[in-house]
Length: 115
Image (cartoon, rainbow, N blue to C red; front, side, top):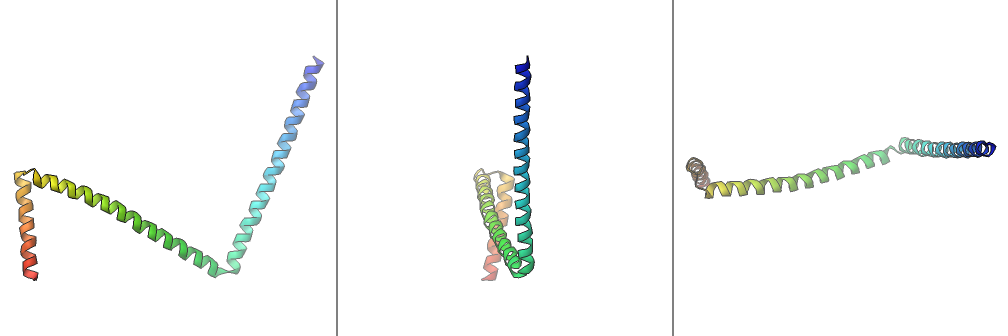
């Protein structure tokens, strides 16, 4: 019985030691992160052109990403709509085909008038 109590006490002492080590490690990590964060802020305060350049670069990268993304999405949408329009015109639906033929005729008449 006493041996079991001693084992349990040893386990709790080991667990308490592990907890203290973990707390110390966590505190060290937090201190290091605070140092880096403070250093970055002070670095940008001392060199505002560095912050301006970084923000300009990030804006440029975001703009290029937006442009490329919208180009790809737009191309996919146009391809899908063109395929649907082709199927509609080939299916010879009377109302839609007549309406589309009128639109095509109006566009061709306008192009002749411009030339």
